[in-house]
Amino acid sequence: MIRAAGVTRRYGALAAVDGVSFELAPGEIVGFLGPNGAGKSTLLKMLCTYLPPSAGALEVCGHDVVRAPLEVRRHIGYLPEHNALFDGMRVRAFLRFMGEAHGLRGARLAARLDEVMARTQVTDVARKRVRECSKGYRQRIGLAAALLHDPPVLLLDEPTHGLDPLQVVAFRDFVRELSPGRVVLFSSHILAEVAQIATRLLVMQAGRLCLDAPMEALRARCAAEGRDLEALVLDAVARDREARA
Amino acid sequence: MSDAAVHRPPPGPGPLRGVGVVLRRELGAFFDGAAAYVYLVGALLLSSSLFMNEFFLTARVDMTPFFEALFPIALFLLPGLSMRLWAEDRRTRTFELWMTLPLAPWQVVAGKYLAALGVWCVYLVGTTPIVVMLAALGAPDLGLVASGYLGALCLGALLLAVGSLASALTSDQIVAFVLAVAVGALLYASGHPRAVAVLDGQVPGLGRLFADHVSALPRYEELVRGLVSLSTLVWFGGTSLVLLGLETALVTRLRQ
Image 1 (tube, chains in turn brown, orange):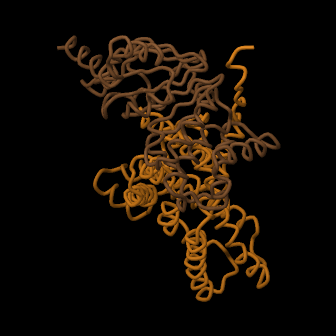
Image 2 (cartoon, each protein chain N blue to C red):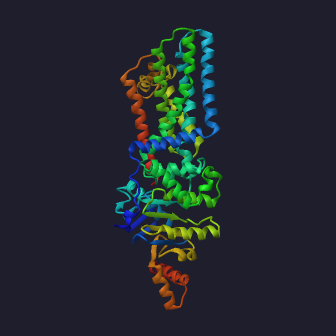
Image 3 (cartoon, rainbow over the protein chains, first blue to last red):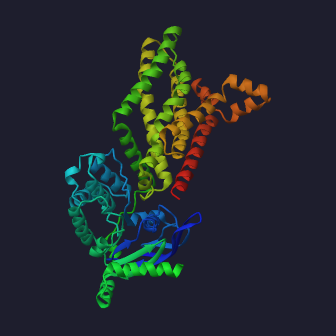
């Protein structure tokens, strides 16, 4: 569903993403982990076609992000890190606009609006302006906008940023509900958060992928080696750093 | 059944419907606050009062002075409309939202531009009581009035294309405004007889060259005087399209 082959993104001499390769299949909840500046957001921006790769191939649902960007955008729901929304619009009007921009209309649009607003629990702020909503509501509005057109790929950049602990728990449950038949790729720099929800872990460090493994395999390794997950991930990062040095 | 078939997104809005979606959002955003109404009322009061002053002095049942005064007023009115089109999105980061929707950059550019042009049309409709007043007081040449409105529409199309391109160049609305006013002033002044004479005095033929090929003023004045020609309409339409094409290329490049 997502295929990256040697994907590189350069800003001048700096490679923000450097030769990253992976394939993701439907049903996977992929935690995308790494410190700030590791290249997570850059890779997500390439996946949503906002940035073109400098080299390599990147496909979403069989569509190349450079050659068929509109097809890629049809198949993704994207919640960006800063989640900028049209603040002056009322919540339902904003979501209606997002649905129409994806080609939804008529009864299907109305039904999707009702369904997604109920699932993301934003119905009670439907008539408020986006700027009047709290951070938690804004994240949920962004998530509702990403889900309206029922995309098979969900890209969530730091989706729990700014949420309170109860909202984080609700978010985890929600992502689990969403995952059947979909790829959910979400970035974070908090391992504990990723570990609770992801079925697969991708770890980036200075633009390179230094760990790509199913969570079950990682947990089994932890049990076998008597180490915790954090130590295992840090070890992978350190080995990658040594290999580069 | 493959998993991809379980979640089947819609086929996208299509070219014209996509433009319509953007147009509706931008019109809604403009008319959502009091600023739009203040803008329209202020613009109508300014242009109407300038015309009424002329009307009482000359007592001519003729709308030509209104359209003659409109170009210099529009130099400030139209950049006021266009300055937020992209600069606001760049400042608030909603630019990324536009560029990740299944809409091609040209659709977003066209939708935003047509929304601004729609507001200009609302302003022009707001000036029609002048026509009613003139018709009540005498017999104005309605062909000349229609030609003047066509000129005002062409002028709006051109200056809004300049303004929306200026707005895409910066995230600061004031800079976008100043840039659009400066380019608009060049399009006006380069056809003004005094500027032409001064330039011709410096370099023989230069003033005439600018007036013939760069300035919008001679072409606008033709329309105001009732001389509607295909070449004038093609010049306004073609120049606006070229500017919108440049804006589309710029917007596409901005996300890279």
